[in-house]
Image 1 (tube, rainbow over the protein chains, first blue to last red):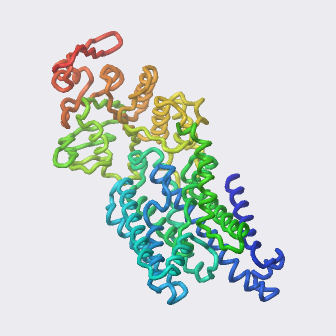
Image 2 (cartoon, one colour):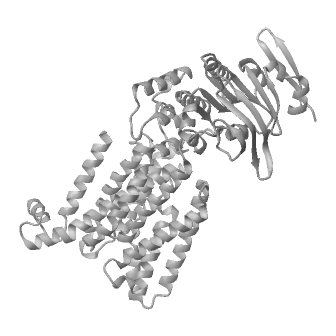
Length: 326
Length: 252
């Protein structure tokens, strides 16, 4: 409960800070009033149409990545697992890149995320087909790696065939991941899909706890492994697919957040699920704030900053836990 | 009344049956030892009985829904796995999972089952220690305590005492013996024939997937069977402390 309070507090502070920090200097009371449509009409536009969707998307993307990272690590019983492992984020990125390349992305506002989601759904279908309904966790990883590699190759091919450097750089920038310049319609597109994913993933707690003792013991404790796997796969696909569709590729959250919080969750996978959801939101909000604070005029990308924060943090963790690992 | 009825259970690996038409029952009060050389099919028989492997024939446990089965039989697999750094108490409490409603905390009854399991395995002082930081033998005891916390009429264990020190081996089998005396039943595979003879009320010997003998230890452990199935030159001695199997050579 202490952990829950602390994480809620950190996430809350980050959320408010994210609404508060920006190009236009708006005081806190003015900002709150503007959020509810009162006061200076310019401030209302800034708060409701620029900062609110950005902040909401950062939090939602963080919840999706943190939650699916914790679930994936719990299922595979491996602290190195991350949501990208099953190829959903790579496939969603491919869908977006193809949409950018073909000009489909410019046809209507949500064309790009819709293309990304379609590709992510296709990837899940392919993985389910490859791994089979009763396959082991190993076949799932292998199918995921195969799908990721294929998606990465097709993404490279698209870049390779791009008609001009401008198109290629647009694609490159999109792939770095960002929650800036998004509208509330992005939130409304992503939220229902993500929420379905969250519900599926949050229901995995018991099964993941039992899996601490291995697949055989978990099954004998009454856990249905094929069901658990399907729920994990669909939940991750919905959450991460939607996150990638609206924000591009944001790495490291799903890997680092459960890793940091595992000790505070006393190792329990079920506790780690919701803890990582909150922690993921806090971390993405913090990283997005950093993009605005460090070089506001250069449009730093979220995925870049996330990796810049995440990688050293990960190194530090390895350094600290190497004695336990050895 | 029986706790487990297995009829003509066959488990195949590919075409080849690794368990071949096995039939047996387990009644309350029995501690049944499953003995046989490596590869005889002990693990496959136990897992098939639980319904964890595709099989032909009938097993009363495999016919149950997973949740009902978890309330009927606890299972200790051979591979000892503790994936995350959780406290010993938390690991043992996982045995209560089948009885917990979604998201519910341990009730007082659950907690007392956990405490009793810790006490039976002599782990009271390990309660707060990280299970992953313990030695292999200690982890094995924690995992046995986890199955005890499940508090089921039947306990099935696959080589539970492998890797334990001699005192812990005997203490564990004494726990099994007590469980049987309390009216529960234990079905466990074992490699130490003397310990099996002393602590089990009944032995099932399997060789090449078939049940060779099923009965009191004294009837099952004959020098002929030890030679034929285990390829052992061995004497079966009747001592004041019970039956002792003394192997002294291998039949080549």
